[in-house]
Image 1 (spheres, rainbow, N blue to C red):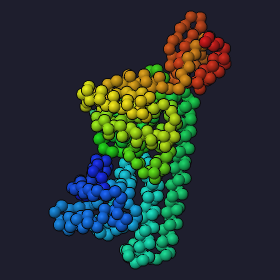
Image 2 (cartoon, protein in one colour):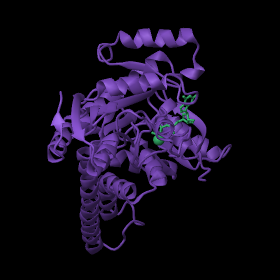
Image 3 (tube, rainbow, N blue to C red):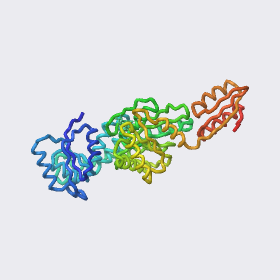
Image 4 (cartoon, rainbow, N blue to C red):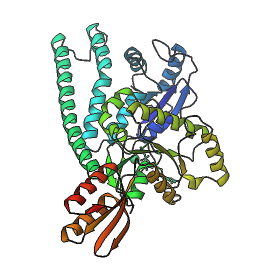
Length: 421
Ligand SMILES: Nc1nc2c(ncn2[C@@H]2O[C@H](COP(=O)(O)OP(=O)(O)OP(=O)(O)O)[C@@H](O)[C@H]2O)c(=O)[nH]1
Ligand SMILES: [Mg+2]
């Protein structure tokens, strides 16, 4: 628990997201200061008047302030200015997200990804500090001169290289596993969407899993892949890191291999929290769709409107009508569900099945041998068996992916069977 008192500074009225991010780190928001400006002040971000007002607030010590959070991106010189003016830790939005990610990183890959992003993020700030130290403005920092400065850059470079190598290794291993699964006849379905939409909850429900679910932002950073418990087609469902508006590029870059899981999926389930205002739902869906296209997703996307249990029928209809009018959403399947109350989950599964690419039907006839029996149990794992009949032969009808189709045909020929249709 951090239990620090935070003061938020923003140029805009809407501070919901930055406040949620801060609360997710257990910061207690004791005040929010909004300074309407079209552009941030070049030196101080919020302008000299507001700086003075905040300084007075800090000095008055009515309430202790431990940290100042700025809802935006600070230039190193602005950050330096604010830290000096307030004599407090100053976090901008990216630094706050990085701190949250660092706290949530529970596996080696996520830890490395966060570390990589942090190194990238800090670089310009460290440069500024070095510059100031040289000018004698910040004597506490790296007071050792040139040699240590060069040393510092060298260390950062080495660390970055090592982390990238380690990440590449993990990524290669994952890619191999993924190929293996795909050629093993599995369809890959990925969960995507804003943080806190209910992605992990949906995975837990469909795969009877116990991935961490929380009412806080960014509960999930690492990828989890599970077989869905559907009798029909073998599907692997992947849960991964959530989105947020303007997810910092350095985080997207660092989490590239994790986000790739979404790009290679056959179908993407874009989950949204439908209990929010219709305009918020719409905005979050748009942000998510844009991020999906940046990741390189070309597969079908199903919009899953979750948490309908907290809406009345009218409120839900209103949201659906509104969303269906939006150009980018109008042609996508839109399925209202409640994961908590297991509503419309069958409809969602049916839509997933319909959206999977090229399901092909195949009927084969095989002799009744031991080998054939074990082949058939394998087929149940990889394909949806729609009919099986025994007489002096066995006749099997399945729905399957093109890859599985080719494999079944090849094995059928090896086992001296024949293709009926
Ligand atoms: N009312 C209601 N709450 C839900 C439902 N599904 C999930 N939640 C709640 O929403 C919150 C977020 O759920 P998660 O499954 O952790 O969300 P997530 O999308 O995985 O979030 P991140 O991992 O942070 O990206 C939790 O408090 C869940 O209990 C639902 O159908 N109805
Ligand atoms: Mg999650």
